Image (cartoon, rainbow, N blue to C red; front, side):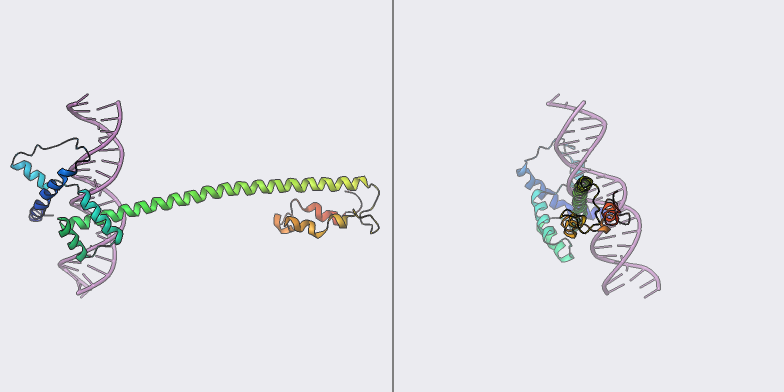
Length: 208
DNA sequence: CCGTTACAAAATTTTACGTCA
DNA sequence: CCTGACGTAAAATTTTGTAAC
């Protein structure tokens, strides 16, 4: 930016700056800690002109309202805002650019924390399901032991014999038994881990 | 096509201001 | 209290890319 532009900018700021100064004096909610520049001479006034100004609450609120309505800024709207707020149109442009950047950052942060939460609940879920599988395997193991115990008690009786009592293997291994657990052999994959004994029972010669 | 203008996004710098030792 | 270092948010600038004319 060349000097002419700089001076043009300065002159454009001039009226607005002092208007702002007046409006800001009544607000005074926040304490102004350090005051550079006692500003009592021409150089001081010049510095005040060139100094980067914090926009007033009123100006920011207005801009925020406008941003909430539409993130993009057409030149017509920009000029309108600038004149209504006593700002350089360039300031309005810059404000919208920065505001869009802040908005994007915030959105990314929100998205990140959402994904993080989802990930965490998925981990908890996975853990719960793994425990459930362990419990079911345990139940299966107990059932197997119980069946073996019953079979052992009937020592000497062939399980393949159609003449056995109601506790025959056909009865014990009724298809609905598996159905209740909702399992099929594909559940544990090709190894059939944990269900081998079921298959073996059908082919069991006499004792295991 | 080529230069110009206007604008946007992203990155960076500058400034104002609060906090804290 | 005062002061300087430090951190942070916001304003402004720079760089780069793109579309319209």
